[in-house]
Length: 196
Image 1 (cartoon, rainbow, N blue to C red):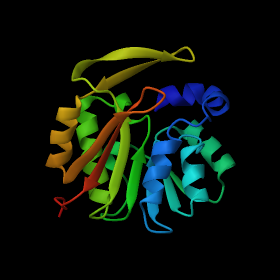
Image 2: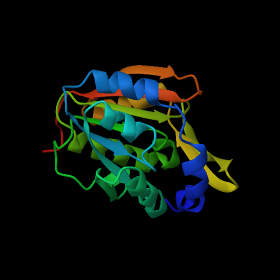
Image 3: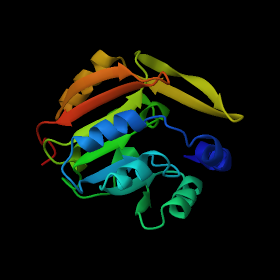
Image 4: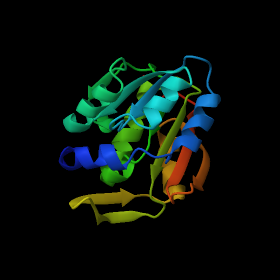
């Protein structure tokens, strides 16, 4: 994503706190040891990818920003990270035991979010959890927001709409809540494989 290329230095220095760690570690603790996890929108790898690695899991990063991936490789040189987009995950079907998309989906148009959910479903195994953040209203037009002087567009669905969309792509939504930073967190589990 071009916007993240523009703010990569700032993001790497300012956005390395604890946001997302509680939910990430809850997901990590529910998995078998050394599970294979896809970190969608992995950014510079801190704190989420690093925490998953420290918990003993295998992580593959996916991000559309080459500048963010450059910092990821500096921070976590032994961890694979691939440049690509969530709506067409470049992995074989049934590759991962879990996926996380923290701070990613709301940057995608509603159509692209649906494609991303379908793509994530395809690369997950049956029973795999999918943790993501997004908005909590049906926002068709999207809204502009500014991060470090760069304008981003934000889109979302309501929890009811996410439940329906997830269900159409083989997921059952198991939890929706707001974290301490005000992010709306969604947890779903892949229950059926509809991508054969």
